[in-house]
Image 1 (cartoon, one colour):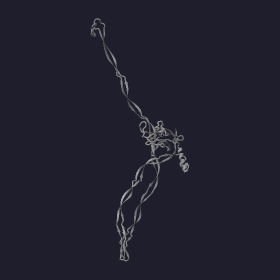
Image 2 (cartoon, rainbow, N blue to C red):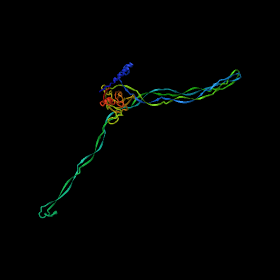
Image 3 (tube, rainbow, N blue to C red):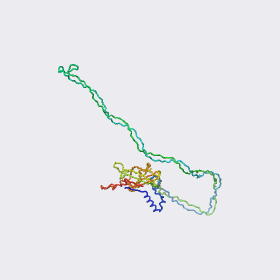
Image 4 (tube, helix red, strand yellow):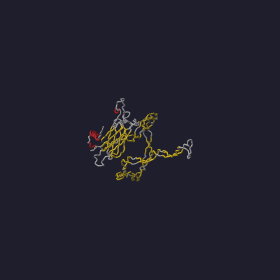
Length: 454
């Protein structure tokens, strides 16, 4: 079934909800154009200081002082002496000139130009002619042979009624009754055989090859920066050198009259006591944590079509085996066609040069969302093209698991489509004993071959 997902629908829903709660005009939020939100949220490894610890019970021992003062005395009328303190300070000193250093904050802004190295480039597909000469062997039937000469001898009887009647061994040249005949003939000796021969042939290894065209260059830029001229400055000040001193003096003054003679005294006593206190044991420490960072931005939309081919029909985790006995995986083929019918010039045409595909797997039993990256790479810049990728899933995912496809153009525009893609795990397989049940009642399917418009 053909599905059409329009970016405008999502923007309309988002804008409507914003207007309902904030009562702001659409133009005050995003402006006149329809923008596409590009989600760049990701996991980051961050170092954090974890403040923690615990209270520890500590046994202590202390001295409990129960000493007390016994106040007593009596009134006396005898003469007594009182110390009259006449100690005093003699003030003196002098001024000196002292040098000291002061930090003076100063500086100014400076603007200059510099050359910065800008890394850029793109991939092109080229036909590379290549090959090599290969020596190979083959069998050939070679016809060959020769003639050999053979001799045949035999006797031809002659008619001689007198001499040859009882002659057993006729003699050549005699008047015998037979003549010895000698004949020569030739016989063909066939030496035909299979013969191994060698030859050379050209093996063509020509192929299409992706080559990176490096357009990196030095670019003249302008920068403004603060030139810090802060420094220490030597200054002079007056300093008072104090040479004052203390003179200790006094005398005993004899007095007469009623006065109190204090005979009070301390009684020193006490005991040791065991008691418990709690001490804070600080176990704070730095810790590396995986933190989800929410980020993104708005960009201009593109228009066109995306074709998605997925196999197999039912996606399982890698812990299941496929029909070949290997770990289960999901294969994707994603093709695109960009609509440049409204482009006025060749420069205005949008061409895709990067593709990003990932899936947010919504795990079962509240285990959270796991992001699985499927493809994230540059591609040859084109108005139409395709990529092929595969991935293996660690965990099962519910039908709320969403697969996202982002297409990035050279000019910065982005297209985005998404769809449900459940992952069958041990918890998501609804096994039925009824053999008449269709697989769709047993496993979670998702899409197979779909076309999307953006």
